[in-house]
Image (cartoon, rainbow, N blue to C red; front, side, top):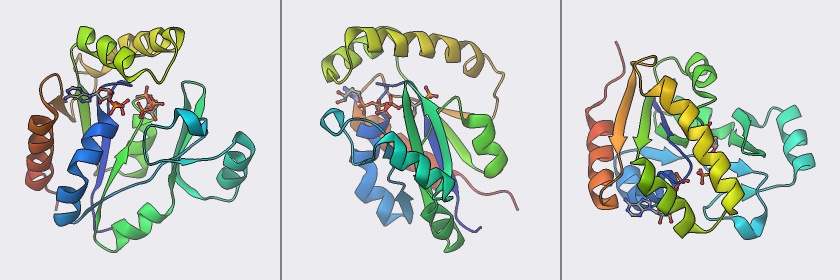
Length: 189
Ligand SMILES: Nc1ncnc2c1ncn2[C@@H]1O[C@H](COP(=O)(O)OP(=O)(O)O)[C@@H](O)[C@H]1O
Ligand SMILES: O=P(O)(O)OC[C@H]1O[C@H](OP(=O)(O)OP(=O)(O)O)[C@H](O)[C@@H]1O
């Protein structure tokens, strides 16, 4: 594979989707494609350009080998279409909105990937999740609790080869830093 896998992770509400939307054109201009996720989220809760499918369809797609990566979290199944491997082979970079829980498996599949952890101050995160109003208060608390668990392992040095990207400030600032980070990162020889 010639292109780079760029695996963007971070708490629900940290701004992954917003960042990808805002950086889409600039990323395309530097040869980086964004994977469109397949999610078993209900269509009316959809806040991103994901393909929404029901659980049976997801299971069938998984059994058919339609996904390069897939995971289950927050009561939902998420899949990254197999086409990303063709993009990588063709020399394009691929940016994936990933899962922290799936990080070890993603690394096994793409050993040279660039993993970027989007961080945001805990209070800001809570505010943003409520302001987004996509989940119920109970679902938001479950996400915050899940985040606290990851903060223990991801932020305390157990995973050294993560690039941290703070999104507590403006989205424009975060976008510029992401573009710079990708432009400066090189695959090992
Ligand atoms: N830098 C930012 N400043 C202010 N609000 C932001 C910023 N980044 C994201 N948001 C808002 O925070 C909420 C969560 O962002 P979203 O992109 O849905 O996060 P994620 O995809 O990580 O779950 C959205 O309402 C979004 O508009
Ligand atoms: O293992 P984790 O890092 O917790 O991630 C699990 C999933 O949760 C997030 O999705 P979510 O349903 O919140 O949608 P989002 O991408 O819009 O945040 C993230 O994008 C992952 O797909």
